[in-house]
Image (tube, rainbow, N blue to C red):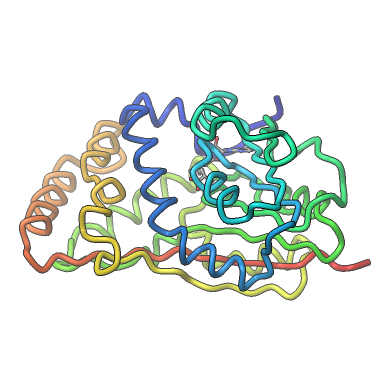
Length: 277
Ligand SMILES: C[S@@+](CC[C@H](N)C(=O)[O-])C[C@H]1O[C@@H](n2cnc3c(N)ncnc32)[C@H](O)[C@@H]1O
C-alpha cells in the first residue's frame, strides 16, 4: 500500500465536511482552472500521444480532462487512496486499459518501472507531502530522459484577492498554514517549486501562474472554494478562535451580498526536465 506521509486524507476531510461537499470542491477547483492549466501544460511540452502519469489523481476530475483532450495518450492515474480511485473508476466509466490505468501506490514509492513516462503531472499533491524532495525524485525516476514533471499548487501567501476584502482572511490563512506546517505539509509551497525541482535534479525549471477569476467563471463558481462553512471545522478543532470565525462569517456575508463581488485565486505551475543522460 505504501506510506501516505501527507496531510491530505479524504476520509478525514469527509468526516469534517462530508464526502459530497469535498468531491464538489475538488471538482469545481479542477474544472474551473482546466482550460488555462491545460494551455500552460501544453506550453511546458505536454502533447497528445504521450505516455502520462498523474500523481495524486484522487477522484479523477483532471484525469477525465486529460483523457478527453489527449485522445491518443495513455494515462496512468496514481493515488494512495483506493476509495478515491474507485470513485474515479465509477466516474470515468468504461475506458480501455490501453488508455487508462489506475494504480494504487504512494508517490514516494510508485512501484512503476523507471524511464517510462513522457510527462508527469502532480496537482495539489505536493503541498500535502512530508517529503516533497523524495517524491520529486521518485517521479524523476519514472520519467524518460528528457521527460517533464509539472507541479500545480497553491501558495496561501499570495492566494489571490477578494473584493470587498475579507480583512480577517490573511491572518486566518496564516494560522492554517502554520497548522499545516506542524503536520508536515506546506501551504506556501508555490514559491519554492522551481527550487524543489532543481534540488531533486530537474533542469530547465520554470514557473507560471494561472488565475481563476469570477469575471470568467461567475462568483457562484467560487462558492465551494471559498465555502466559509469549512472554517467552522477549524474553529471546532481550535485552529482558529470563535471570534475569528464570526468575523470571517460576517465579512463573507458582506462579500456575498455585494453586487460587485469579485474573486480571484492563483495556482502556480512549475515544470522541470529530467536530464537526458
Ligand atoms: C487535494 S487532493 C488533489 C486531487 C487531484 N490531483 C486534484 O487536483 O483534484 C490530494 C490527493 O493526493 C493523494 N495523496 C495524498 N498523499 C499521497 C501519497 N503519499 N501518494 C499518492 N497520493 C497521495 C490524496 O489521496 C488525494 O487524492
